Length: 74
Image 1: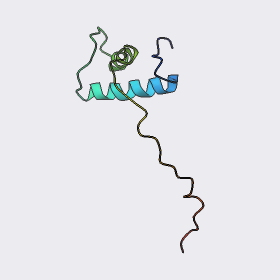
Image 2: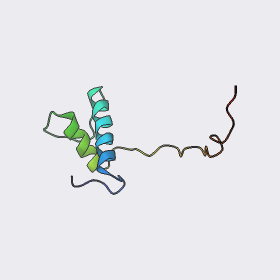
Image 3: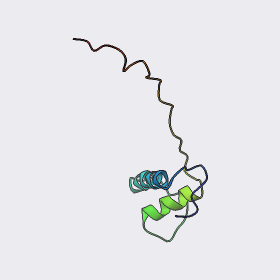
């Protein structure tokens, strides 16, 4: 795969983002690019390539270092 934006760290994430965006389009979200292709997956891939889809990694996980060391109740 080529033309993956630098912001995306792997092909796997690229495909996950495209799949999620394709589902949004199938459910009625307007496409952000004009394409001749009727395939929503191709539209979603192109939107991501053009960096038209906002996304992030989400909040950082909370530190759970001490959770496993607590004794079990019971």
